Length: 305
Length: 305
Image 1 (spheres, chains in turn purple, orange):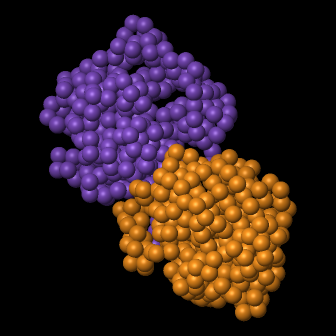
Image 2 (cartoon, helix red, strand yellow):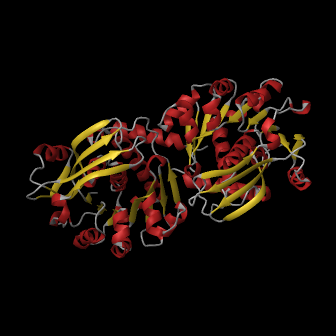
Image 3 (cartoon, one colour):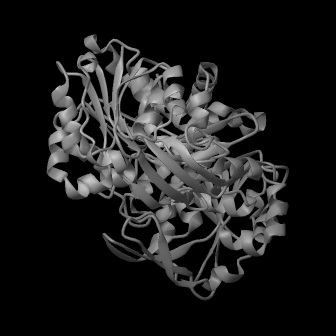
């Protein structure tokens, strides 16, 4: 089944204790697509500037990502410049130039309107909702958000949460969203806001999945060499949604607890690959055998008795 | 099989965002014993002052903990006074009075010398090693340590690590011990220092077990109401060692990967109980059915597909 993602495309300049990479291909929809394409056909809605090189476009096309929904506008592509702390568990943004992404009004091409799976990468809640309004029928929809929108667009975000199937956030965001300092309480409270499930990402500590019928905890893949954490969360979402989209959502088959858990594990694997290279380097070159090997290793890591 | 623990007995004054409790029964060996006694017969080696009340002694005796090795000396019992941060993930020590614990020279009673399982709670490495030297044969021995000893008694600690079966430490300690900032690298490096396994506790994020033949990750029990985190680590160790001691260590049966994993889960359950009350309140009153229910819930929380 095909999978639509709506989000940013960017040039990232990334400073880490291991070195710096300038003008990497980045953005939420890029990481998401490069992860999800290992599982299913991805349709991308994003915006780039006139400076977006043909080589980047080709890299995505070569990986079977549909770029019909990528609008190229006059001006520059979104740019982000960040620096990670020594332990890479925090980062500061040194510069942001929204450029063409600043007034991104996603237009879902006609050919995409019946896509059964939709991921709304981080963006203004009103913009995220505008995507849903362009879809035909009721796709299986999962969204990301961030502290900025919880802070400034709470009402819009709450409206979004009532109309989506799943929310993927990090631990700080879910606590901020719900006002609960205990993460289990926060996850349950987020569930009460509307989505059928909530995934709380905890970085190196893995993630929790909350749903009315089950809760699930999975650690991060035991990565020994983190090169650059940028894009880990979007890669997780891409692996998660990509795997779910391999099921048959029309019958609801893809949303069994067992499939949701497998999807969380594939998301975890894709995030582990991303952090092992600068930008999308590792994600763009991975093969399926590596993914399956890591999936198996991760299952062994948590296997009970 | 019986289980010997050597460590502190204390009066704790604990300040949390939820309130303050003064002069609680505490200390590493107390938490450990009250957790482990749910699984096996516990023999306690510790020291208290003349001010240690008969009621505390009776509380431990009523729970079938053998106090033959608890020395009562003139002077006062060890006192600790701490205050937790708002999210209870960190604490500051406001006051420590070592009192009779200051020159604790553990004496293992003759009747204890053949105990097949030994836990060396946090203490000076030389003191910990002196316990092992008093044992007959080669018990299955696990030790805790802390930043102070890694900093000041590294050589003594390294000697200890070469003579024990397992080490239980927290994430910060294992990084400090090994000089590795990546936790997986740190766990493996600690294993290379001698112990047959290393358990790294990550507080609310659960723990990792490292051994040459397998690695294992388990999240914390999904506790919604943390009242007081004091003693969680020692309760974990008590549940872990207590469960292992129910096996037959003479044949090595208790150290199968499956049994080690179950022991980690029981340790996790005992820690979750401790943090739900001030001091040892919850741990002293728990019943086996509650433990088994939590063990089951925890297995469900991590159950794959």
